[in-house]
Length: 415
Ligand SMILES: *[C@@H]1O[C@H](CO)[C@@H](O)[C@H](O)[C@H]1NC(C)=O
Ligand SMILES: *[C@@H]1O[C@H](CO)[C@@H](O)[C@H](O)[C@H]1NC(C)=O
Ligand SMILES: *[C@@H]1O[C@H](CO)[C@@H](O)[C@H](O)[C@H]1NC(C)=O
Ligand SMILES: *[C@@H]1O[C@H](CO)[C@@H](O)[C@H](O)[C@H]1NC(C)=O
Ligand SMILES: *[C@@H]1O[C@H](CO)[C@@H](O)[C@H](O)[C@H]1NC(C)=O
Ligand SMILES: *[C@@H]1O[C@H](CO)[C@@H](O)[C@H](O)[C@H]1NC(C)=O
Ligand SMILES: *[C@@H]1O[C@H](CO)[C@@H](O)[C@H](O)[C@H]1NC(C)=O
Ligand SMILES: *[C@@H]1O[C@H](CO)[C@@H](O)[C@H](O)[C@H]1NC(C)=O
Image 1 (cartoon, helix red, strand yellow):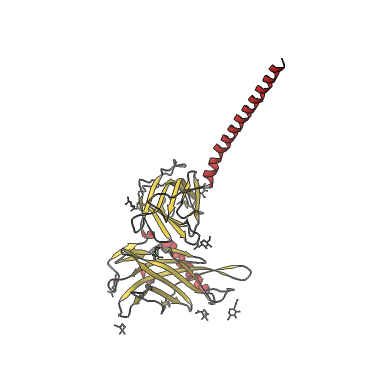
Image 2 (cartoon, rainbow, N blue to C red):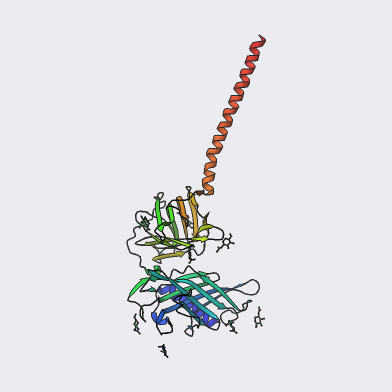
């Protein structure tokens, strides 16, 4: 165990230190069909961190890398052309630990649709002192591993995928599915972690003002495959990130998203809708999720990749993992004129201004009926209370006047 842990820790240290690994340590996996044609080709280095239960409600943390004894599992396949099965790459190691990914494609691109990791808690080397036996499975369908058809996917920097109790970090990855020949295509699509930010920031100013002005409101739209809108978002955004400066001190940096400087892109599937705002040195991704049983959508994930001028680490990368912000019934839109602060992680929060958003079931490219946030409703309360008080005052004055008139009238009569 200690050998494995130190190996794991050394590997993590290297990942953090160098960012980029030698491709020599990646393992090659190849899935072929009956006619020996390659359908998946992958060079992978993988680092795992798993939390597990120990006695006395203690939590163990196991760190290990994909060992070079890992082999292709028999369940790997190229999928059935007419049926529902999709290409599957499954890798097995240390008896009972299986890392698998299945692929899907559209006319233009393909992706790792789901990543699954089965780990064997009965393995005393990997999980010493585990109070649980047998295997556990975790999965994620938010892998962000995709490329255009006839291009291979490459990611040299660490690419983290969180799945319940397990974190899986890929690095030095070269991957292609639905291959044309038996080797990688010529062209490459690199992951967002590998996109080197340009030196001159266009969105983040070099000398951060302490309090930037209220951000301009942008109107963003993402179209579904039919061309109709599947995300509508009207919002002003101000980001606050906390980072380590070159001198080791922590600092926070606030900046606005300028709607005129960002490019909007995204995509929608039945239950997941992605809005991406990007510029030369920034990529901000919002993932909305649809819960079909509850008929609700919500902001399920936010990730940011940007550069900070005086930071020790030039690249600031954060990923929220799963969130449930702005929950709204389907066919409706979420509205919040009042400034709202979304705390994405300890190091990243986002203020929204004049927010109006809807994902999924957008009819005629227009917002559905708005559900106002609590702060807006409280904001409405003040005029209502003032109005009611004024009305009450008018009533009291009127009653007093009528009583006064009656009295003076009566007084006149007695004379
Ligand atoms: C596929 O390749 C293997 C080993 O390279 C070979 O033994 C087998 O005959 C080939 N099968 C076909 C259908 O070409
Ligand atoms: C899990 O590990 C134990 C101990 O190494 C082994 O006996 C068992 O067969 C493994 N389980 C599976 C499903 O492979
Ligand atoms: C796990 O399995 C081993 C062998 O089957 C058994 O001796 C042990 O008691 C089991 N532990 C738990 C917590 O069930
Ligand atoms: C496959 O392509 C790589 C470069 O992408 C090359 O180094 C390798 O030799 C090729 N393999 C075969 C069998 O052609
Ligand atoms: C969505 O479609 C509208 C209307 O066709 C178009 O103006 C807009 O640019 C499209 N948005 C994106 C992000 O492609
Ligand atoms: C930014 O966020 C950090 C951490 O949440 C907080 O301490 C800091 O005050 C914020 N900065 C500004 C300018 O609001
Ligand atoms: C998405 O929804 C459409 C229409 O309801 C359905 O035909 C299709 O099978 C769904 N796709 C997936 C992947 O669930
Ligand atoms: C959908 O919502 C229901 C009810 O709130 C909840 O029980 C269920 O876990 C949710 N499903 C997903 C996939 O989040």
